[in-house]
Length: 141
Image 1 (cartoon, helix red, strand yellow):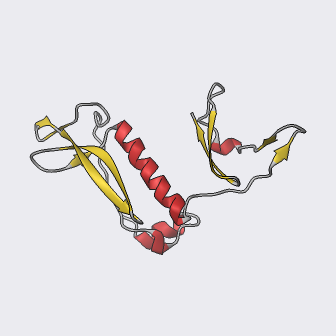
Image 2 (cartoon, helix red, strand yellow):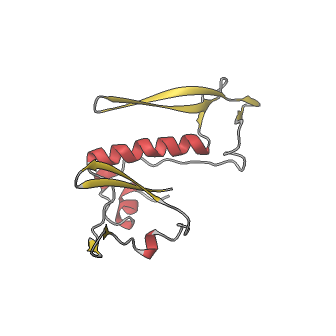
Image 3 (tube, helix red, strand yellow):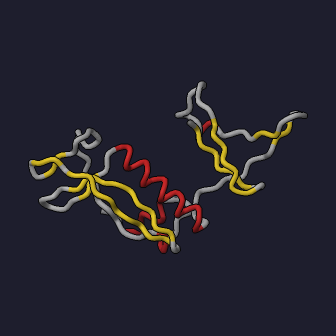
């Protein structure tokens, strides 16, 4: 097992102070299928809360009534991922890149590097949310 220091050296741009703890995860082959089973019974839906800088965010999980373990299905994990992304954005720790702003005489546009777009498909669209006049959140949908 690698130490947190060794992992930090291998991950470019991440400082040892930013690593909270090592987490071991085991994913069952049917982990993303509903209903989720644990201890021989169906898990029940439960709500969890995260408090962050005065904001209280809630998300749902599948909880085993016998052992108390929480499980996330694919939809729930996407919601939790959005909460974590929001937290990173507010803390100024979200990955960023700088690209040239292009202008074709009518429209401004930004090009995304091919390395970051390998999973995109031609029919997808970009949903842009204005945070401020200078800051936008771009989501590929």
